[in-house]
Amino acid sequence: MTKYYTNEVFTPTIPARLAFVERETINQKLVNALRTPGKQIVVYGYSGSGKTTLLVNKLHQLYEDHITSRCMQGLTFEQLVLDAFDQLAPFYTSETGEIKKNGIDIKLSSDYSVIKGQIRLINNQDNSVKAQRILPPQLTPQSLARFMGKAKCCWVLEDFHKIDECERTKLSQIMKIFMDMADEYSTLKVIAIGAVDTARQVIEYDSEMRNRVSEIHVPLMNSDEIEEIITRGCQLLNLEFEKKLKTDISNYANGLASVCHHLCLNICTTQDINNTLDVRREITGSELDGAVKLYLEEASDTLKKNLRKSV
Image 1 (spheres, helix red, strand yellow):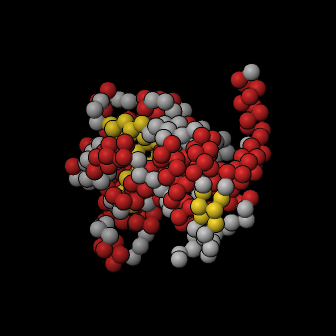
Image 2 (cartoon, helix red, strand yellow; image 1 turned 30 degrees about the vertical axis):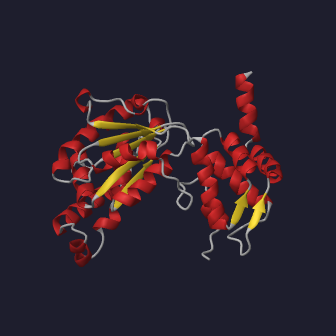
Image 3 (cartoon, helix red, strand yellow; image 1 turned 90 degrees about the vertical axis):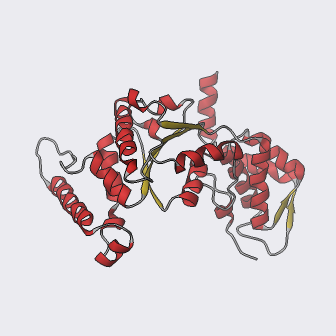
């Protein structure tokens, strides 16, 4: 029997891999958008609903590689472009033989090195008034698209709704560039992920982008999907959760996969289960109280803050 660590199976804070559950209601729409050359994608929904988990697993199934930039408040779009460029380094700093193998020509690799050198030069310049990292002239959105296209990558922007609104308007412009260049690079696309109610809150669209962006809403999981997470996790760890326990966890999770993973991990923690068991063990509903208590203790200050806001 293959052994797994408990925190590899139940993953409340990172995308699920081992206990990933396919969601047929939205799978086809996402797969179609990923396979359509030039189609740009916005994935949105409540935090913890499984947006990133779903996308990451589909990308691993359909794409050779992808680059992920994680957004936060105060980040400019130029900084995001530089971050994507920096992450392309492994594709362009290998030896000539490897470059040919990966389908990246030597000239493009040389162009990459030149721009990289310019960025270092800009970084090292000492300005007594204000030091600011700017894009070198050659690193345009078109150049970035060409570099990513040759590397057969797509660009994932995690939590893009956190970016200031004035910066978000620039995304639709680079989406249009990526779309226009998809005739030459079929895998080229931008995927923006945002934890909000509507796609338009994630991106301020350019009027030319109508019908060229696939807006994919990831809803809360239903009870069957939540219970399937538990079933898969139990199979990997050689556990048996009784039916009532699965139902109670599903009720507490209220459609959020992250809460389900958290409670299941807490149950294992309180029972000192750290990896796959040699002998199958049954877990009863009585073990849930300790898991919920631990969950509440970990989030006590946040819950109190939310309660005060509600009152």
